[in-house]
Image 1 (cartoon, rainbow, N blue to C red):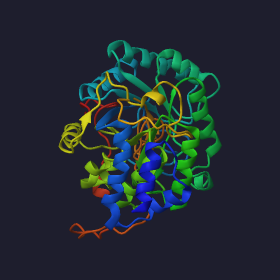
Image 2: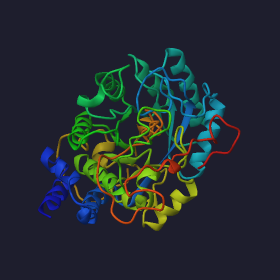
Image 3: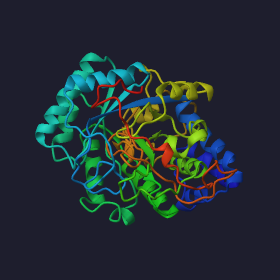
Length: 425
């Protein structure tokens, strides 16, 4: 396809596609899916080789959030039966992080529910960051605490944080229909505060909340303008007890097209598969590794993920390798602070380079972690995501239609942080 050849050429030069080209990727047919994956995979390998960065979420404070984000199982009014607990102590958080690091993760994403941290909360998280760094040499730490006030990003940086995750989640035009207790502009402001403080900015989206193709392209181009190092892609996890519980719109093929579009728009940024991959990609998860160079290991904020051992086996079986702690995630021009990747600019340097970056809220579309309800990364809320509408190919599984809901795949986390049971890492 001429379209795909054009997109590969642009991706290798760090040149963005046009909006029309990005929309065309989402409109490709299932018959062309492998061609799309192959093309986007060339861009992924050019900048990141066959490395996969592993990230691990630690939910510092679960539930009881005053915000009304429709996708989130921790939201105000949620009746989802999730774990609810107040702040973990620094030693408890460090112990939880150690399990993920032992499983191969190089970044720990510290997530806490709530509108944003108080100054006391920043003190508490800063102590946790220092404890984790003192006990685990070389670990990267990303914080995801909600909206930041002036000076808080700087304090987190001084405590040793490497990154901050806060997702845009959806387009500015549709944001008011998802959340009413804060604005899209509030989220943009927090990402800019993190960036200005010298933290690696992590910001992504949640797909599957009823948005159009145009909305998906809008939010990804908005992210490109903000120039985050890491772009987590969450797929909505429709938790029972939340307003979006019936939003089962995704197919595995649709999810792959969304990941490919994000890779073409942000060719040299760390693209992370966040919450909801197990629910919506299912057996096609290995194909997604050809598009994204980063994943979460094990469980998310309030939902269970694929077993950590299964994640490692999947990566190896697909012919990829886990990125080592001594490797730099990002390409040299971005790792050196030159900017560019997901933002404007061109770079004709060839070859692949080792690299490193982070993500929002679990389950819901996160950066350093997933967001609740969206299936995301650090900085948002736990959850999962859906990828628009598209007919699923192949015969349906027994007892459901090809595009039917799969609530059997949504499991509330009952182990790890906040419990006496060992985590899944």
